[in-house]
Length: 322
Image (cartoon, rainbow, N blue to C red; front, side, top):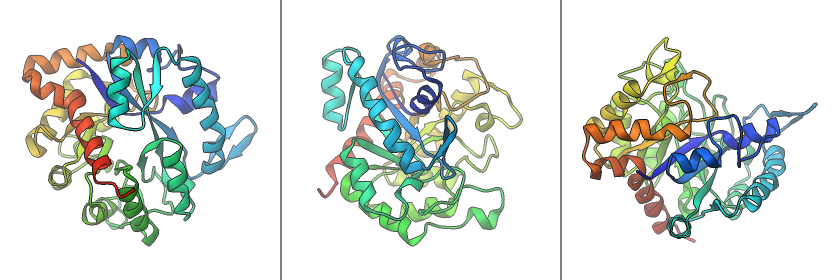
């Protein structure tokens, strides 16, 4: 079963630790991707608002992007027999025909925009095809999820609405994971294209403020978007330190029941989670796909594993105004 995983933090992890994509001790490397039957991996550059410590220097999010981007390009170059960049669905499919895994570049936390809409164009030109609007701090776009209901209902800032509009024009996937509920509904109201929650789970099954309620699940379904179920135990079950296939399956099933089979996808958050894992890395993705195949038809499992992701990517590409 082919896999498109909508979110991992592997690039920044490797960059900061001096590792490489070819082989490392994390959840994802090229050998693990091959073993897990990856069709495409969405690699997120995690660029938090407060900056990133690189050696003895703290780099702001935009500085960090400029630092890590050439490293990423070099990693692709030295591994070009195994993995290639993909900026479109057509390129994903072409890479697959050539026996290669596709790398789709994303950015997690739009703080690097710094109220400059032109930076979205720069990101797009450099191959970024998904932007997680923010992480766990307020930024120029909006506000994060919060246990404080008043804070959680804060919407997008005016610049955030401009970002949604420009992302629609460019054909860049809007990702609402980490966003406040108010911001979520602003995206739903203003986006003319499907949007995604690349690595989120279900609040009915686990009450974390990062998770989506039933109305949000239905809102994503109504716009034609997808939810990439997160493998982090903190979002699967309250007070849990163990991520199990059973719990992942429960969240997949709940999204399927509430939002439909067109709206379920996978967003592991590999290399960004630190709990114990029954599925210890990407190479063991077969444990999950085998469990899915025992419960659902091959057609439904294919939608969950890669077809829904391809459809949404294509829908966003087709409706862009370039």
